[in-house]
Length: 469
Image (cartoon, rainbow, N blue to C red; front, side):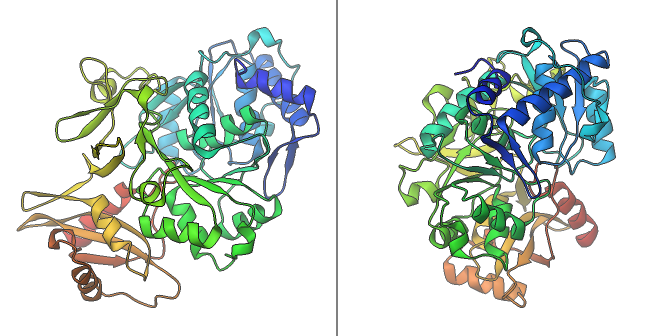
């Protein structure tokens, strides 16, 4: 394997100059063009006085341009501060100041092309190439430190789990600066030498058209996105004829809807369970049966040495880990145990065969009358209702019980309406425990998203405080 993405792209540009590297709604980029443009961007940074080890913040749409900028920074020996397109000014200002980035690049053309620097200046796989943020669902995000070596190790697991080959056509609609987006759009396609279809802005109808146009075989999308594909009026099974596998995750994967995706597209749904910080602790593969693929987060990854703390909070040590939070002793004190195990914020269980199931988030419980109610379990049960397209469960304030269960629901276009009584009657008929029944139902046109594309639960919690105070 190459010792950096830059050396891999240089090799591809020499061996297959006209091969497709990236495609989007309105642009195609060959390996030769990718190599040339990223080199020119690197030269522009050097001409502006950037030294090896400096930092530059990049906030660009998720098209080919953001990958050109990321690779150009690598060739200049500069660390990228990756900022999601959805990030607001307060978050951007925080990340730029927190990391000491010299400037914020919001347009590729803002850095005039320069003479490509010598390869001796390029970063290597053990150098810090990226600082990115947590999803920012509540408060200001923390900054996570990445080298390429961890994502190269992750890539090997992805190739094995999805039976990936250079003949695949990848498509990633996940925001590029975040963990899921980094490996699915910036790392794995390049290491494979396979083309990758990306989108400057996700739109379900356009995504379906691109899947069909480029005969995509491997799709990567967060849960919300693949549900939007299923709900799109443009959905046609024949558009997905080439698709054989979809990597998903980032949020709880609803079993019923994942099964629907498999049935309607013919592709297998697989996932990694982990985080921007940990990489992955477990995974499903194309070799798992449907029950394990869709009802669990997969088998624990041996090299990550996963162990459970307390009530079932997983911790790990292994090659997929980030380097923790940037210059943040307090944050790292929460992220690591005293003896160096990196923690997830979830509560999980692991069965005798090594398959991991997420029970809920350690910080995502609704405490009703002293009883912890898992928001993830509520979302799973409500999500089985045929009228429900998307759901998010949060705590609603209550004088008597402290908190009650509130769900925000996006209805399927054919649903018409849904009343709380009808929903609870449906759950009762399913035999769902009463503690998981919603006590407030809010119908919305869409759910708010955080920078990483996940549902912004912080916004929903604030709305619930106002709405039900």
